Length: 279
Ligand code: GUN
Image (cartoon, rainbow, N blue to C red; front, side, top):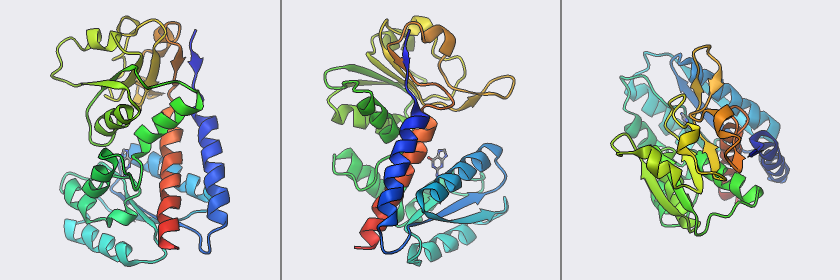
């Protein structure tokens, strides 16, 4: 039976370290949180991030904008926040309403305030192994592997999904930790066969029921990044937990696994930004 990786407990430790360091800074770190529209999942995520900020002694400046917000209005707000010295980090919750250009918005955030690590400058720095900020979800996963002393070097790692936010940076960090990484996606023939070769399997697709026991090697480490809703509206991941748990050596639950660690790394990134600004 797999050991369950307790993301909630680990995240609490990380946040406590951030709180202690933030307390010693001359000025409390500040995060601007922009939410455009009424996406219910985004509202939940943003509330969680604001709660984490409060726990870490970080001031959050919420900007809840209507669905009809124009591109120009949003860019004007970001320009203002880029200049605001009380704001160390700017987080614009994705997805944005269809009328807005996400790439343009991400590119308009000053790289030194891009605590999500979405800006091409920061993605580039991370990809050459000289990061300014860490990509929150992938770095949260790496922190879990470190905390449970799960080696990556020399291991076969398979990442399901190739999004800019999770799949791609996840593959990069595993590669930098000397894993041998395969990235699977919607056009991959026989994904199950590749998944079965994994010592470390990371699923970041967003499809309930995707990872079944027959896709998992005996003793594999199974990391579930997805945040889906099942038919009853209950939060669940990609992994069919009950049937995979007996086969895996380690497994992350949903909720209580990767999600809290993503938010904890965000807090670390805000601290990093604040330290740089207050030097
Ligand atoms: N939407 C889903 N995940 C994230 C995230 O980590 N940051 C932002 N800004 N939006 C998201």
